[in-house]
Length: 163
Figure (cartoon, rainbow, N blue to C red):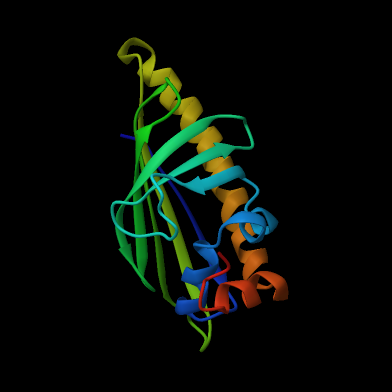
């Protein structure tokens, strides 16, 4: 099963880095180049294990995902519940650890996936690894920029987490 990963060191502590990663709405769109539209599903108003989100990517693709872990400030994990036809399975995890300098965080984002149909899987997964690798690098770069953006940081530091 293919895995793509990106790592960035950001200039905020893990608690704040995690909070930035969980912002929603206009604050999220300010830093996340992948998300065109995103909202909680089923009446949820905040992230948490079992909560589902609906995300439309910049590519126009729609995915419903569910938090399978939510452990601030260290990690969050999700799995695809429903998504593009070519994904048989898609899941991801974002980890946040104290960085090498005080007040910094090392963010590690990892996605794994399986494509369908099985006959095309070898080629589809090579293409998917390239495309998702490019997207995850852009996305974590946007996250790093968000962690240096005073508007994003101020919203993430609020008690409502920018919601």
